[in-house]
Image 1 (cartoon, one colour):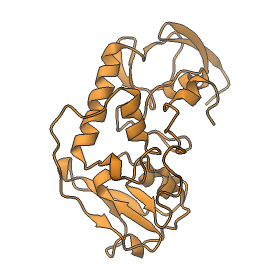
Image 2 (tube, one colour; image 1 turned 180 degrees about the vertical axis):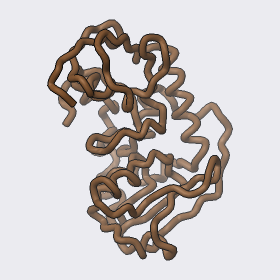
Image 3 (cartoon, helix red, strand yellow; image 1 turned 60 degrees about the horizontal axis):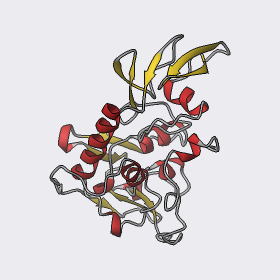
Length: 237
C-alpha cells in the first residue's frame, strides 16, 4: 500500500482512501459499515462469504478483496444488496444447525448479530438439518461443526498468526467441512486455547471449554449494540 490518496464515492458520498486499500477498509476508515463475515482485521481477505458484496461501477464485487481506484463509484446500502445479504445470511442458517437460544455464543455471534441487523427473525428457506461431527478431544477447546459457516477465519488465523496451520477444509460442496491436521482430532494438534485461531471464529463453532455463559445474557457484545455501529460511530478498534 502507498500513501497516495485517491477519491472515490460510496453511496453518493465522496471519500478519500489510500491507494491499495480494499473497498471495505476504505469504507471503514470513512465510517461506512459494509457487512462481512469471512473478513477479519489482521487476516488476508478471502472473499468467500460474499456478504460484503457491493456494486462497483455497476458490477458486483467483493469489497474485502477489491482495491480502491480513483473515481470508483461504489453502491453498498441499496435494497438490492440488502436483499442479497439477507438471502446469504438466511442460507448460512439453514445449511447448518444454529440453535441460537441454546448456543453459548448467542449475543457474541456475528452471524446472529447480522441477522438482527437485517431484520431476520426466522430463515425463509427450509432447514437442511445436516449431520455434522463434534470434536471434544482437546482439553480446552471444542469444535461444533453444526455452527461452522466455512468462513476460513480459523484456517487463516492458524496459519498466518499462530504459525501452526492446524485447520483446513476437506470435501466439496455440501460435504465440505472444517478439518484439523491430526488424525486423532483437535486434541492431537498443537492448538492452544489462547491461539488467535480460536478467537477468530465468528460463530459458536470453536469454543473454549469451561467458560461458557461466563458473560451473562444482557452483557454480551451485541445484546444492546447493533453490529457495525462502532464503525458508523467512528469508535471501531
